[in-house]
Length: 288
Length: 288
Image 1 (cartoon, rainbow over the protein chains, first blue to last red):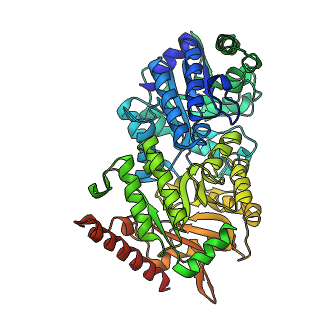
Image 2 (tube, rainbow over the protein chains, first blue to last red):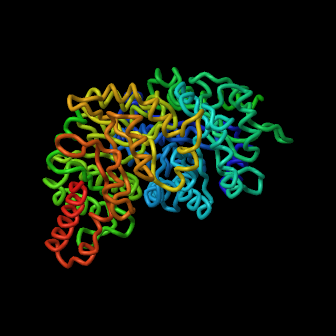
Image 3 (cartoon, rainbow over the protein chains, first blue to last red):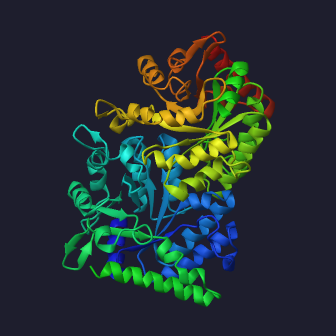
């Protein structure tokens, strides 16, 4: 089960997930710059630095897709390199559609041998539970995970997600509706591979989300450059005999574009900068 | 403005939009079957048949993406062929994300010279208005359109979209919140290029949606094989001196996989079958 693999890997390495977000104009010239080849080289180099240091990476699909088919080839290289290196791959695609189109997306990211094979993919729940079903079926067949957008942390999340739907915020209604799906992807660890994007705005909201879905692994955005500290990021995690568990905390800019990497004059300097940034973040998160 | 181009084209041709949905295993061997090349050949052949007959085509991105980068190259070919043939292209990508990732998707589909350049792209509103802004900016800069999922017609749309949010269904709250965006993309025709996916379940709901957004062009799914008749599909359209206007009605299976096309022994027979199916649907819709 995906959940058990994730829990085992975070027990070894800690909860950090390295976000691979090739923002326009940010991929160093050292790797080929803002081209498909540059993205592939840079992403593979990040994977090399992350291997053995973290449980998972999360490529941001939109930042590959902006370069068209060449960017999608780069995404494919990064996913393959990461899985070959023993890292879990969370494809941050935020897909979602009806019927056979959802089957298309699910088979593109979750099937065994899929073109962009990942261990889990992010999905938008707006269209309803039937649109999640094709992802669920691929996850069940291939021991993969499905990551549903519940509560995102952007300012606009207040437009709909936090508005009152019959006595509870929409995001809480989404989490409630997911209960049977959470049960279906539950592993031996007791955790479910039906993960929730849990961008809580504070520790109270994170604990409320945890109460709504005690078994769902969380994917927490916004640690590091985006502002949240370790304690806030892990407020929805659960204390056990082995320390805190309950999901992954994503960091992107702070670990893939640290100042020392931007200023690196050689590949060796760049690698040292990235590894140091990853170790620093992981130590911070593991200190709790 | 995109809205004005769409309204002018539908005045000439009628409201039919041809959905290009390469379902797994459905692309005829005549074109190369279920491969990137097959999808490109088949999609371009559909474009040839649709040119001069309809205002717009709508490629379903997930059904190209399932084949990986090769499928995305096919999507690129289909978008280019359609735009070169003077057809409006609505990329049905249902994307949506925050900040620079949304910018990535918007530049992939709406920028001038974009890899998958379309005239409009479908976007999921769940994450909030700030996540729509990068699409709005590209639309304003390049005279393109943005198509927001408001009310979809799948059974699961009842899970969240139709639930009560402070006195009105969520989809109505989404449409209300879009009012300033609708105003920003309004053309000389009085119609806005901020389109709504309006999969109403019946004529009353369609008219209610129209009342909420008098100026938004609708993209209506589900005509033809999926069940709705012409009168139902166009219940949210508005009667004027030139007949009904107010958007596009999408048909996919019924016009791209008619029985006569499945049984075609030659390319000539296949072309005749597709053209006949398109003309039949267009005549049906224009009869109102």
